[in-house]
Every structure is written in structure tokens, then in C-alpha cells.
Length: 355
Image 1 (cartoon, helix red, strand yellow):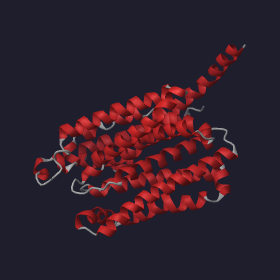
Image 2 (tube, rainbow, N blue to C red; image 1 turned 180 degrees about the horizontal axis):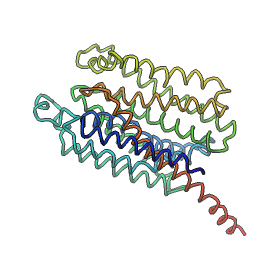
Image 3 (cartoon, rainbow, N blue to C red; image 1 turned 180 degrees about the vertical axis):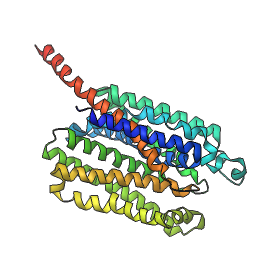
């Protein structure tokens, strides 16, 4: 495998980190906003990858032959992503009103939204996810199959509560029971899009495998769109001031155009492309759909978080995305290269055993 993509990823990470470092000296709050919004995108990829790996263990399917190597590579950048949450954890009052005593006096959910309990829950999420990552990476065969169903349940619960804690609680007066499922749907879509992109560009996938991956992408797009639309519909039907303010902030000004673009680019356009079977079987067509899905999912993560924070969007959000993404892609490419290098040795050992 060429080293150029790995070097490019490391350079991107360095440039993004340098911009964020300069911003931390001039406008640290803006950097922190962009950091959290970008973290929401990148942490979702290894978590979504684990869900898909466990789902494949339970159901099987031809799509896994092509997608599983990339999904395992994605799981490998879970530990560094958890480390990148440290700036948020050390500066909670800068982002979360409930962490500021003057702003939290009126809240009725202080029993849940307080710093000690928040840190404790975050530690539980990290321990559970790292344990499941070890299962997904190191265990194989029947042992992992037996843990796939409990693993999916644990992931579903912990990711839901983590989304409440890290993202929804930036506006502690607002809540939605669908929010966590909507986050999970986006994570599944992002992880499957990246795995499909890696499979069609870097692996020998046949037309049948590409068709299966395209069909699975179609199903996950429908899941994400259904959950997102149902949250909007429920809030619109209730028509309560404390509920609609969340959407008012995200449908005003430029964020309204971002919402329309996200609905088209992450829902209508890829769905319309994928129901046309030649696109599913085409390497170029499927790769283009996956790139569109990844870009629109990043926009969705910014749209979910930045309007709820004073100051909104700045160019530090793309810089943070570049810093995190370059590092994650470097780990992803390194993990893929080591997996490819190990395959010939594995085949030789197998042949020696049969001999």
C-alpha cells in the first residue's frame, strides 16, 4: 500500500491541530465549540462500526466480506477519539449551562446533570466501549457471536445516554426521547458509508457485494430519515414553546439552508441514486454516494450542536474536523496496511497446517 495517503492524513492532522492551537490562544471558546461538533462526527464512526460488526455476527451476509475489514479498522481509532474528549471534560462550564452554578439554579434535572455524575457516566461509557472494541477486534468465531446480541444492547444504551450527556445537554431545558436513536442512525450511516467507500476503492468487490452494500445503505438512509422526521413531526404537533425553540435556532438564517441541504444530501439524493440498481453495482457511483453521505453527515453533526451554543459556527469547526480526521484516517490506513500485511502470513500458516 502506498504511503502517500498516510502522509497526507498526518499532514492534515498537523495543519488542523496547528490552527486549533493558535485559536486556543485567541478565541478558545470558538475552538471548543468546533471541537465538540467535530468530535460528534468522528466518535460516531467507530461506534457505528462496532454496531455493524455485531449485527453481521448475528445475521451474516455477503456484504460483510467486503465491509468487515474496514469496519475493524474504524474500531481501532476509538481509543484516540476518547482521548480527544479530554478538552471538553476539562472545560465543561464553557459549553454546558448546567455546569455553571448561576445558570443551573432553575433546572429541574440537576440530579442528573451535575459534574460528578457526568464524569462517572463518561467513564462507564469509555470502559464499556473499549471492552466491546476488544471483543470486536480480537475475538472471533463462536465466542464473539455469543456476545454480539448483548454487545448491541450495551452499545445502544450507552450511545443513547452519551448523546444525551455530550450533545443534547448543551441546551438542558430541551429534551427528546428520539434524539439518541437519531444519533445512532447517523452513526450507522456514517460508518457504513466509510466502510463501503473503502471496500469499493481498495478491495476486489464483485457486483453482487456492491449491490448488497448499496441495498444496506438504502435501508440505513431510510432509518435515519424516519427518525429525524419523526422527531420534527412530534415537536411540530406538540407546538410547545419549550420544544420548538430547538428547531427555531436550527431553521433560522444559514442553518435553515443547512437543514435543507442535509435532508437532500443525506436523504433524498442518495436514496434516489441507490434505488437505481446500476449505481449500486458501479464502483464510481457507489463511491460518489458514500462521499456525499459522509460530507452531509458531518454537516448534520455541526447542525445539531453549533446552533445551540453562543457564537455558533466559526472556521475552527473545519480545523477541528481536519485535526481529528487526519489522525483518525492515519490510524485507519495504518490498521488497514497491517491487516493486509498479515494476510499472506496467515495463509502460509494455514497451508503449512494443512500440509
